[in-house]
Length: 376
Length: 95
View (spheres, rainbow over the protein chains, first blue to last red):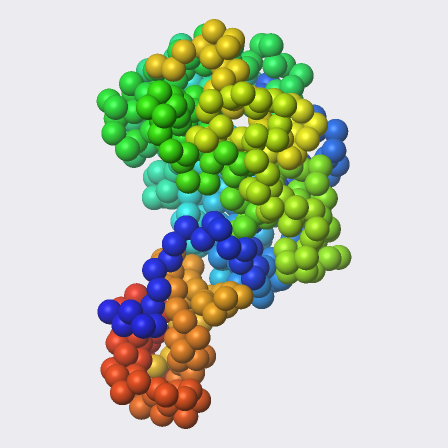
């Protein structure tokens, strides 16, 4: 191997790239479902309308010229767009890979075959929140479960890589064992990811009905940690009860042992996204992240994405968030977990506190314990 | 139709040149990525199907001062690695 000419590709999270490596694009503001914990709808900062096909294709040409490697198309429900195949062709033409985030219900044979033929699909993520319709449809609406499972089976038939995401809420927290069995053993999927209903968008309107209580969160953590042992490397999480259960165990162990601070902790370091990716809303507004949809950095086809990426003061402020120490927040005063804490997601921090540069109260271990929670 | 000795870059491969003298070659068909340095980028930009490997080595030697003695072998190994991963093919003879 010519080591002189080849470097290993690392996680590339600390340095800002010349252009974004990938984008999250809300390709539509339309959806055929109205899920009770959807983060997307009912965000007062967002205008819900779709750009025409040619606007997206022009933008995809810009992405190709910038060397963007991959795009995730979400929404809304991306498969609701009648021009989706044209849009995907635009991505392929510009040498990108793509993923789609979907409720699965609108995926038919023709679309699955098309996606397979592109050879560029990293995965289609389908949301499954229950082991049966009675659970899944509670928050997603009648027929959503059958549609999701039909979509997964259709994609699998065409050998399109399927990723399943389970969003945990009050109505499925008792079904997690069955969900794991259904997805891993009945459907035979290699794995699935988990998160939980977060205090964003429509979920804010239904928070008491859908968001986990302390006791339910503890139950979800314990169940998922047990299931993750039962199914090694098949249940993943970057947020939600499983991720918290794992992180909080490490934090508690470290605190109990008086361990040295974890690397890059004790400051607002949770979010590395602005160093390698950026997002676009359905109306064409460029934003740092779909969770920070109110922070408009520019507009596609009006502003140069490279210019926004390199010089936006709002984006650079977000990138510099990692320098802000947790010790400076009244919220964190006296907390013994500070040396092990990242402050968590800025999107949730903003939704709850109205401040981006603030730790997220939702992910606070001390608050969880003070409210009666225990770490499984 | 026979292959020539002139390597040619896979046109689907994306070159991302970054600020701090490194670059990424990304093959969207396989999702493989290779990181490389400025010399690797210079080699990549010469994989146009008109130059032989010897031509490329010669141009690189003329473009950079103090080129190490092992440069021809390293460049050949680099191009071989690219070829193994489908980033590079050999130009075909024209009729």
